[in-house]
Length: 294
Image (tube, rainbow, N blue to C red):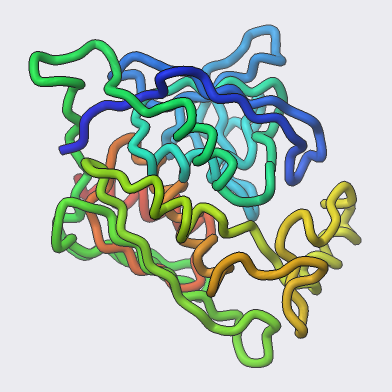
């Protein structure tokens, strides 16, 4: 079982949102054990507290959005998956994420800025300490195979071969697509996180889309504040105005997203997860299925 962990000191991030284009500041604060990960909208008079749990997810395409009440869209915090991925990979179980706008800052489109700042702040046992250290957290274990599917995409959660989350992602846009079929895999041991390896192999992978998708979204009025090199826009010749940071960077970013979305279980997951062409909606469905099995 993993021990409860939090930050030693706050970590702060400032930037604009991916979808909203609005400037915002996110501050991740230490929190006592047993409270979990929560977001707070400090720009609103009521300053609502929003738990990072799957039953607080409000369905929106291409992102993970949390609301104070199930089924409610306001007030919400948008695009939380990258910071949740960083927190999960670093073993942070309890913290308060205060944000003064509707969306978490995009930063560079990856989880790396979050990882670097949280590591610099320090990850420590969360109070109150038990006689043998910080309280233990019971994991959510896939006891038998689970499969969820949506629009040709699938996700499986299989019983693990050890006390960890093993995520394997298969990306396939089909024949002739500008992004070649590719795969990536990452093993997350919640009892012994490996921040340095995550920072090398998964965290730098940026959010991405094809140029055709980017053109369609710009025509719909989205992302006008971004240049192609601010994220990862890919056409037939490769990334536009930038270069890949990692081999199979798009598939690695999908692994990053899966880790962040699975953190919405509210406790570490022990499972072998195999995802094919899945997105946020299917990630959330798998969390719900695992909780129902438990």
